[in-house]
Length: 120
Image (cartoon, rainbow, N blue to C red):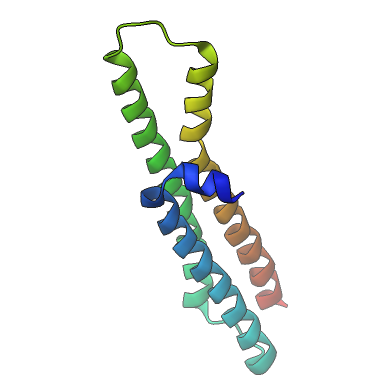
């Protein structure tokens, strides 16, 4: 997993890491608020969903930039590129969107569960 994180590039992976840390902090805060006050702050609950959406959007942005750079480099090449090399590059380009999607799913599932807890 660490290798995939490194291949994704720090420019696009670290903002998703920060979003994941914020999401886990919000989940902890919301669970603490629920156990102590028996209520969930609406703004923190909404922030959970929005930070997850940011992680997904940033991952998609990183993938688009990676694909653009890859196709730009391929356009300038004079010789034929092996298919395996091309597939490996596409795999690396998709790492950021996959990572952002995982973080988004964590935030969305947490949002749904905490929203159901809030209504009860």
